[in-house]
Length: 405
Image: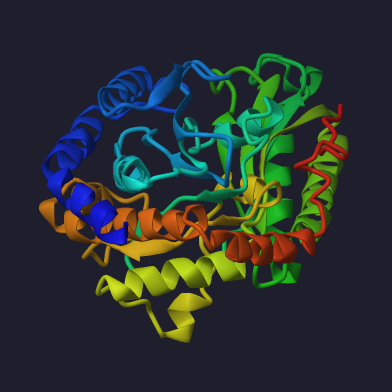
């Protein structure tokens, strides 16, 4: 059955690359992936999957093959791009790998005398800033799912990457407009408050732990120099290795915003958006996947500096607190960092195809090891490990970062 899956992916490689290139040449931002949604769902329908378009979200989808009698394996496809620089995170390749894996697993299931279980391609939009998977979780998309897998292109191959938890914070300062030359004393400068907030957060970095990342921009600094700015806004991304540490950093940044507002005789509204949890790789599932990759000729980095390095953030972290999950990173023959123009080029180049197809095959083989007779014991151990994972209150809705005024 494993050979059937591999052969199917190999025979589909040209069409999979065409699909990836279509995404790469037509990048779409989060929640706007209408073309991607159409071409991916059409492709899967032609391949014999049952497809639910606009599944919970307008640009999400669910494509399935199989039955209820066995494990339900989800392969997560991402396909949104970044502003200005296109597929600089290689989501075109993520979609290709997920769909390739589904084709391979389906072909093997079709050869079974008594097929069991189901392979599911879950089309998950808006990873870049929209936290689409959190919305799908809220919409019960993961109910009944036993295991979730996805892969992500990178400059190195890491089976269990360190992904940071993340929250987006907007600090909107309100002052009072006045003529900056004729009567500045009658104004309240919201920009001054924003600048003091920015400076205060920057000063805090000396006390942040090494695994904390805080980066912000000014999204509004006033309209004209001769008007005391009555509105100013900062947008921050706040990250840490664990949710409990994130809570502490968020509080420190919030105090900087409130203190700056008081100092400038202004007020501030604080809005939190898009919580991304850290990724909890299921170790047994990750080891199974890694062995399959290695059997296909792929090597993983053994450099501790690379393996233990801090990555960005992903809404797959939210998924990993709901079902056993993996989110391996794989090399695509480039030294360029993600979110760079150079990585965009690499994600669309022929050099990315060999490793992406290996990822598709490895996910298909991992899925089959759970779907075939004898896979129940593996799944039982995977689920036993997951049962030891403490719930994340921000994922399950028990807590939230409160918006304040």
